[in-house]
Every structure is written in structure tokens, then in C-alpha cells.
Amino acid sequence: MTSDALYRSPALRQFEARHADLPLMQRAGAAAADWAGQLASTRNRPILVLAGPGNNGGDALEMARLLRQRFFDVCVAFAANPERLPDDALAAYRRFTDEGGTTCDEIPTDRHWSLIVDGLFGIGLARAPEGLYAAWIASANRLAERDACPLLALDCPSGLNADTGIGHAPCIEASHTLSFIADKPGLHTGDGPDHCGEIRVASLDLDAPAEATPDGYLLHRGHFADRLRPRRLNTHKGSFGSAGILGGGKSMVGAIFLAGRAALKLGAGRVYLGMLDSDAPAVDLQQPELMLRRADSLLHADLQALACGPGLGRSSEALRLLEQSLKAPVQLVLDADALNLLAEDGRLEGNLYNRVGPAILTPHPAEAGRLLGCSVRDIQNDRIKAALDLADRYRSYIALKGCGTVIAAPDGRWWINTTGNPGMATAGMGDVLCGLIVALLAQNWPAETALLAAVHLHGAAADHLVAQGIGPVGMTAGEVVDAARHLYNAWVSPGNSL
Image (cartoon, rainbow, N blue to C red):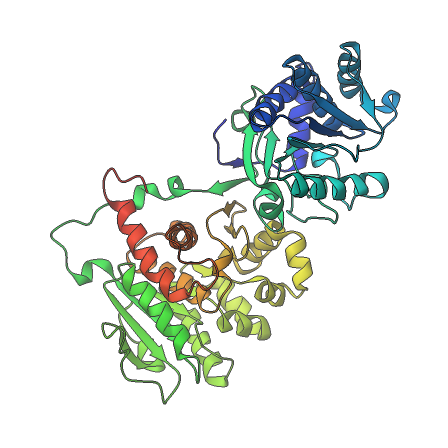
């Protein structure tokens, strides 16, 4: 099944209950055996299967039975009492043993493996593994590294929360993950990408989106493809809007320059920078097309979109300019210190909530914690909830940045972005994202679509650089600007598959 649909555990358990009359465990085992067989086929070594005390263990036992039928050498580590297994898992255990399969209650230490399969807990564990199973998880990770073999997780790596992406130590470090019925959000945000490796979905012959509206979605180009059109020949700079960016406080002019260059190179017809620093240069020598002016005068310019925050600082003048920005009758982006000022001054929350035009907020976890009055740990413990809480509280579109950026709309819809890489963990990347968003807004993109496209493009541009051998280590925000321009033009060219 190819789908962008994401479902959390309650919805998945409802699917399972609704289809309890179907042989879902057999289907899961068959799908797992197919992929496991492919992963192990090039190595002349046995397969180690870790089977847990619940239905995930039943899936693993069913897979092991089928692999044995295909003449693979399979070693199953299983330490539970079979009679205490859930009914379906007990039936899988009996099918396995009836065909001559045997289990051991510890992991053999004298063998090398072609493949290790994690069938311990799947989505059935939302806390840190303990005791024997914690030791097995640590051993599986160590043995996979020792033998340089794949580690396949069934449904979800054991120890990873499939809803939130929190990895409870110890947690399986899978090279491959086979998600059953539908995809899960925790595989794609927070710790998830570090523990899942390549992800595939086995639908088990169910069509989840046909039965229930997804909880959320994986962000892809299809969510904004209808806006990716070549420009008409009969146009001029006024056709593509005027974007304004407020910021550039003392010693922070680099932030507003990065945002401005990103906005210019993503196609805004004019880009104005409103600079707070009285000693700021009168021109950006690297990008003289940018129009620099004093911050106050920017708010009187004829703009289609306004961003406030890159290098803004937290001075009284910055606060005053943010207050005026909130009153501007244009689409608005708030980033960096604009978010910190918003968190510090309670009066501004109402101004933002009640403003006429849509607003976009792009906090990193620390800024999100300030806006919600909680810790970074609270934000990261449930990134989706945090993004939704922000969208509701501020009646704005939210991009909660980080590994698997979460985008939330005020009406409760959400997306997870999967583009991007660790090279983006460097200064100025947020300023570039801010510039990309305001550029699309200036070109009359709706706020939601502009945010989705900019976040996806931002990460995809960084991935494009890595594919060219630029980064991830040492990648700079400025390099992402040019890569984003290149990629965006490729996207709008008819027939281009980039």
C-alpha cells in the first residue's frame, strides 16, 4: 500500500478489532517473511527471530514458520509462557511448533546471523523495556552491528513509541521496519527516524483510509502540486508580489540577509528588509537586489506578505514593531525572537488570535515550550500534540521544527515532513525557511499550502546538497538557498521528476 495516511495506536486497534474475523496475523507473517527472505537471501547464515509475549511475537512466529518452509535456517528466541499468549499469537505458536519449529529461551552467543528480526513488542509497549527483554534489545543491536547484518522490526521497533516518536532506552535500532495495516507517526518524527531505517507498509489487504479518516499525513509534493506551475511569459515583477522582512537587530543582520536572499531566490518580485540596527549596511553587497530600509518605514510599504523575527532581538523597539506587525492586514510569518516576544508579553497573544489575516509560526522546540509555558522535554514527548496545541492556542498555522517537522493547522489537521538531514542543524537554517515561506505568500499562495511547500522544499534542498557531496557535515544555510531555487525550478518544469 502506498499512502500518506498516518494512524495512531487507538485507530489501529480499532481496525484490528473490526477485522478480528480475518487472518491478519497470517497476513502479517507472510508480508514479513517476504521481506525477511529478501534481506537474508544473499547471506549463508541463520536468521535470528526475537518473539515477544504478545501479538507482535505471534507475527514473528508466523513469519518464522513461513521462512522455515522456504528452507531458511531460523533460530527463534522466545521466553514467554505460550499458554499466556493472546489467542491469535497462541495459534501462531502452535502452527510453528506443529511444523517442527523449536524455540530457545535465550539468544545464542556462538552464532553469526544473516538477519535479526525484532518481534518483541511493536506498538504494544509505550514505556522503557525492562529485564530480559531490555537485555535482548541491547543484544540485538550489538549483534547486528557485529555481523553487519540487517535488523528488521515488525510493525515498530521495540522501545519506540509509535504515536510520539519517543525512543525509550533500550530501543531497537532497526535498519528496516515493516509497519502493519498503516503507517505510524512515531516512525517519522522525534527519535523515530534514527530507529526505523527503511520503512515499508504492509496493508494486510485492508484499506485503512477507506474506512477511517487518517489521524495525520506524511507531507509530500502532492499536497501542493497544483501550485507548481511554470510562469506565464507575460509577467513583470509586480506579478510575484512584494515580501517584507522585519529584523536585523544589532549584530544579527546576517539572519535577515539569509531570510531575504531565500525570499528573493524563491521568486518574490520584490523583497524589502526592515533593519533595526542603526549601523546596518545600506546594501547587501552579496545580494544588492534586496531593498534595505529602516524598520518603521517597511510597515508602510505596499506588501503582500510580511515576516517578523530573523535577528529581531528582544528590545523595546522590537516589541513595538511586533505589535505593529500583528496589525498588518497581510499574511504574516513569525519566527525566532518574534516568537520569544510573543511568549513573554501576554497582550500579544490576543492580538495574534484575533487578527484578520492568517499567521504562520515556525518555532523550534525551545520556542514552542516558551509559547506553551512548558519544558522542551514536554514538547518533544509529544510533538504532534504540542503543534496542535500551538495551532489552537494562537489560531495560526504551526511548523514545529526538528527531526520530522510537524505542521499543524488551526482546524486540527497535521502533517509530518520527512525531507531533511542532520546537516540542517546549523545557524541560519530557520531564517532560510522563514524567507521561503514569505516568498510563497507574496506570490499569493494560501498560508497552509505555502507552509507545507516551504517546509518540504527546505528539507529537500538540504537532501539535494548531500546527494551532491555537500554535507551533511559543514552544510551552511546559505548553500540551502541556492539548492532550494534549483529544486523549485525543477519541480515547476513540466515532466521533471526531481
